[in-house]
Amino acid sequence: MKTQESDPRRRSVADMRPTSGPTGDGPGPITKRAVVDVYQRLAPFYDATFGRFIATRYHRHLAEVVTASGAGQVLEIGVGTGLSLQHYAAETNVVGIDLCPNMLRKARRRVDRGVTARVRLLLADGERLPFADESYGIVVLFFVMSVTPSPAAILEEVVRVLRPNGQVLMVNHFSGVKGLGWIERRFEPLAHRLGFRSRLPIDEVLGHPQLRHEQVRCLWPIGFFRLVRLRKNSFLLT
Ligand SMILES: C[S@@+](CC[C@H](N)C(=O)[O-])C[C@H]1O[C@@H](n2cnc3c(N)ncnc32)[C@H](O)[C@@H]1O
Image 1 (cartoon, helix red, strand yellow):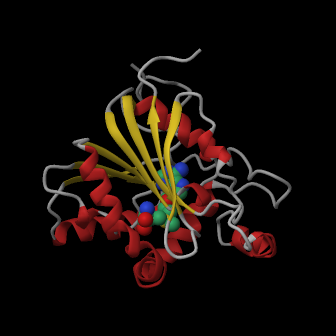
Image 2: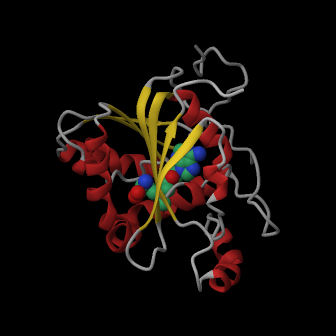
Image 3: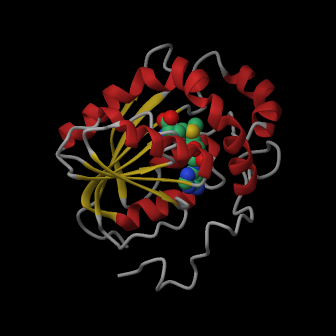
């Protein structure tokens, strides 16, 4: 069993060096420091902007999918201000982690105001999860993969902490939506300055050898966001 304490390769969240860059020929790497800076500043406005107009449309539905999966122990990576937390069923144990202290502070306030699920919130990095191997039945990532330095590094950690047959539920904008290619390219430099990549090919999350994809569904409107459901193999592929 590997934990954060026992594995010398793991570093603390305070170590914010860049770990990898975006794919393709776009601008340079998104760093963890950039992600933290952006969300530290965005936290007071997040719920009223992105949260109000985009994210909350999906959280109730996503939490219902999590509940229906029957996995009692849920890990939410990049929990942000905790917009999903009020929608989980009472029998759910949710651990929410995030890199950004201000986002987590808002999530904590939300939990203090009252949610039905049992929720624990931690400042932690999705690339170095402080959890034992095979400790979660489901890992959720809502709107995270485009705003994180290395989706591949997160997926490695997700696979490590997932139980065999456990699920990954992800919602994200992936590039390749018909008619949006030129907007993604035009928007890329600005998006990068705001701390996210406008172009993330879906193959980057579908190619992990330990995960098989069970569902890819375009979400309303126009399929800009896609729901991806992956399942960890119950046997080891070498
Ligand atoms: C767009 S917000 C989404 C928040 C929330 N999931 C929602 O649906 O509203 C992305 C969040 O991911 C967090 N994040 C990005 N990279 C992360 C990482 N490597 N580990 C933990 N959190 C991360 C950011 O700090 C931010 O709070």
